[in-house]
Length: 434
Image (cartoon, rainbow, N blue to C red):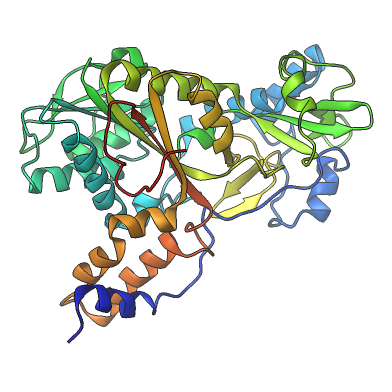
C-alpha cells in the first residue's frame, strides 16, 4: 500500500496539459528597429489589430500630449495605460479569470491560497502569540485572501488577534474584493473597520502603508510588482539611451524611439548602467524599489516578514515589456487601455533595494515549483483528489501542472522572503538566506 508521499509522487507523475496564460514567457521585438507597423507584420505575438488615434481614446489623448511635449517614457505610457481615470485598463475592465485577460495562481486552484495560509501561520507562530497583521498588496478579486481566511477560520487561528488589510488603489477592484469576501456588493471605505462574516477577523482597505497598525506584519505581494511602471534603456554606440514612446502621424499609431539626449532617468542611473556589460537592454522600476523599501522599513520597525512572488528573473533578462489580451501575448503599444501591460520583475533589483534597509534579512530567490513543493503541494493535491471522480482528479492534476510545471508557472514565477532579523527560523518554503 502506498504511503501518502508515494501516492503523491505517482499522482503527480500524471500531470499534463498546456495552456497560455499571463505567465507565458515572451519578449517583444527590438524597439529601436521596429515601428508600430513593423510590429504588426513581424511580431511573434498574435495578430491583434492595432488601434489608432481614430479608434482608441487613450491613443488620441497620448498623441496630443506627445505633439505638445515630445515623446514620453515607457513608464508614463504604462501608467496611463493601466490607471488613466477615463481610459485605464484597471479602471474599466474585468481583468482576472477566464473572462479577463490573464489568470493568476489563486484563480487556478484553491491549493495555492491554502499553502500560503500555511506560510502565514508558520511565520506568525515563529514570533510567539502576538497580534497578527496580515496584509495583501494588490489583492486582485480577493480570491487569495478568501482562501487564506478560510484556512485560518478552519484552524481557529488567532481569531481575536488577527487584523487583515488589503492594499488596493482601484475602487473597481475594492468592490470586487468586497463581493468575494463579504458576499455582497458595496464600495469599501478606506481604513474603515469591517468584520469578516462568521469570525472576529478585522479587515480594512488601505491605500498607504502608513495606515497599517503597529503590529507584527506579514505581507503577501502576489503579482504586485509587475504592474509598476518601468523605464527601458538600450545600449548604443553612443552609450545607454532611454527608450521612449512617440506618435507616428502617418499611421496614427504609437511607436518606439530612442531619446536623442540624456533623460532625467538615464542621468540618475548612469553609473548603474555603465557597469552593465552583458545586456543590451535594461528595464528599471524606481517605483518597485520604493515599495520594496517601504515594506522592509515596516518589517524592520514592527517585526514580521514579507513574501513577494511574481514572474521575473535575477538580473539577466532584457526586453520583457509586453501586453496581454484574452490570455494571448500582444504588443504593449497595440491597444493601450484595452490590454494588460506588464514586464517581468527584476528580483535582484528588489533585493538590492531592500538590503539598503538595516535589520532585515532576505531569503531566496526560489522558483514557485520548489516553493510549493516545500510547502507540500503534492500532499495537498493527493488529499484533495481522494474520493473524487476521474474528471475531478483530472482538474486537480491540471491545476498542479499549471502551478509547478517548468512549462507554465513553475520556473517563471519566483519568490523572495524578507524577515525582521530577529526572526530565528528560516521561513516556510525556503532554505537559506540571500
